[in-house]
Length: 91
Image (tube, rainbow, N blue to C red; front, side, top):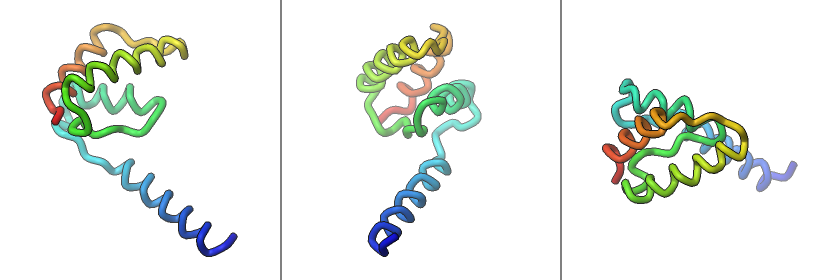
């Protein structure tokens, strides 16, 4: 492996490690716990301040569609709790 490829690999690994250590607002709240549990089944955890409440609303609809395609249950009460958490902590 060349030096440049090794450097890129190390940077990517470092960025993934940092993403895993991300802190989020209200980490012990029911909404935050559910957000971490459900949303990391398919991808890394995005910070709530990454989007506005309006953007989160659209993203939740999109994620719900992806989950339905994969036969992953997403009960309305869970979606509501996650949505309230994200809206409360959006940018």
